[in-house]
Image (cartoon, rainbow, N blue to C red):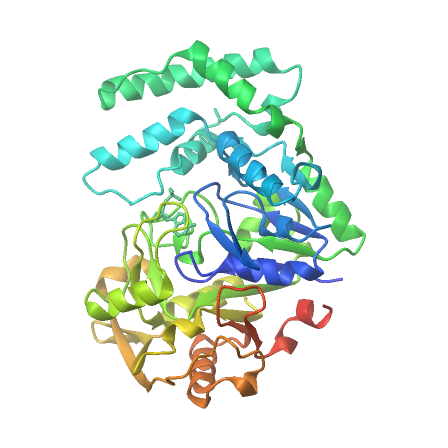
Amino acid sequence: MPNLTIVGTQWGDEGKGKVVDYLARTAQLVVRFQGGPNAGHTVRVGDRQTILHQVPSGILTPGVRCVIGCGCVVDPHALGEETAALARMKLRARSRLTVDARAHLILPFHRQLDLLAEKHSRSPIGTTGRGIGPAYADKVGRVGIRAADLLPGREERFREKLKRNLAAANVKLMERYRAEPISFKKLAEDYWRATRELARMVGDGSRVITDALAEGKPVLFEGAQGVHLDIDFGTYPYVTGSSTGVWGVGPGTGVSPLWLEQAVGVAKAYSTRVGLGPFPTELEGEEGERLRKLGGEFGATTGRPRRCGWFDAGVVRASVRLNRLNALVITKLDVLDSFEEIRIGTGYRCGRQRLDEFDPTRADELEPVYETFAGWHETTGACRKLRELPMRARRYLRRLEELCGCPVALASVGSERRQVVEVKKEALRWLKSG
Ligand code: IMP
């Protein structure tokens, strides 16, 4: 059976949650390999909308097992809220979810330090304020506290580590930010109590996944954020703290990259970005506002309005190459239904050079080059087959394929689970086996 990795090809918020939910129907295991509660995967099933932050979207499909891999950073409070919300939907997460023992924990002071660093910085990043950066910083600083530290019988050792880390955090809080220090006793007690549910889900995620792969079970790896927010290949320093591309699966799960078979990239039919950083095709005026309104472009995690702009083929093309994508899924095509004119950024002028791929190390020098299309002026939400799409919408998709150098397997035309058009199903073995 095949396995499939799903990544965002832009700056996150491409609609990966819905795509994973759609593709998870044929999965037996769905795995998150990076990020934490900074992600917000919005999934609508019937008239119910759920926003998942840390739990893999596969949890919405009964019978599917899920793993939060060792490359993730886990906030026990946020995870508890999520599993409680799932329980209200009659979905039992605990028995189907494994949190890898090696995953690092987000502690309350990570959030505080994240928010204060942003507030006091002369060049803020526009983080989600969820403590992601500081938690990953502790991980690579080799002082992080991991899910394994929460297991029964380890409370004393956990308290020692927490005391050491809190002392360092309090120095920063007081000296750098002139903020109140955090009291150890209350923090240690509250946190330990809040982690009891999580402690029951801690296990060897790497083992669970490799066993499933060896047994030939279909496994889906669910990326969060997007390739251009990757710690190495993104628009550094305006990036998140983890590896958001296919290359993140290995260290983020404990699975050899030699297991990986196919990868699909999710791209919105236009572009959005939250937070600061380069965005060549951004629309600042009325058109941007129109996209924001029609697309409901407000952050699933923070509620912040997203910056909006035209599809930037150079950005997606770079993701296709970096991840060796087999196919693309284009989301929110219906948002463009009413536009008279639609533009695509086809590449860039960079001084006297012409580039067809986004280069984040020269982002300031890039001037986008556009192609203009006449809009289709028809609603697409009810389309399910390629031939049902308006001719101009089909032409738009074909042009995206050409410019990005990758076939489009599916196009999403609404937030409902069923609102998907099969464009080139055959590009993904995963779909053929479904
Ligand atoms: P952090 O991940 O909270 O440290 O934020 C770093 C950057 O990544 C900021 O620009 C955030 O807005 C962005 N970011 C983080 N998570 C997401 C996401 O799930 N969708 C879109 N942007 C995100």
